[in-house]
Length: 213
Image (cartoon, rainbow, N blue to C red):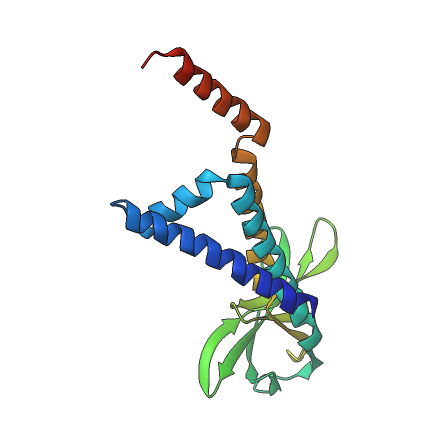
């Protein structure tokens, strides 16, 4: 309910900004983007607040996706597949190699949707020699609609892997919302305080009175 109300308020705010930008575009010989910049520049605190509010709404939208999170875990041999949220994920092969710093065990996973391969992910289980501790590196596919995470927790001598998978909807919108909030704060901070604007207006009025007609 709160999210719906916030979305309605934000739609009204954006409509006001768009209407102001269109008015400046019609009154002066420059494009819509310059008109938008003119509107925002005229009252940066107000319109920066709109941008911050939009960021909050987008973050709330991203957080709401956690209610639809899907998970899977199990043991796979090369050639096995499993399904998660419309994806068919197959274990194609294993790779093991060493560098100067670590031993790497990697699972090559194909990700298909509607029969079409959309990604190849390579989650890893690494043993760092200096710390003598294992560490997992996730395989990640991220889109605006959802994030797919694959975590390799174990690989045995027969290349069978223990794998965990998460499908998290709308995560990207949390980061996008954070970016909008930061942008809005920059717009707000770049504007002059209201008192300074009032003093400047008074100074200009005093200059006009002092200059004879």
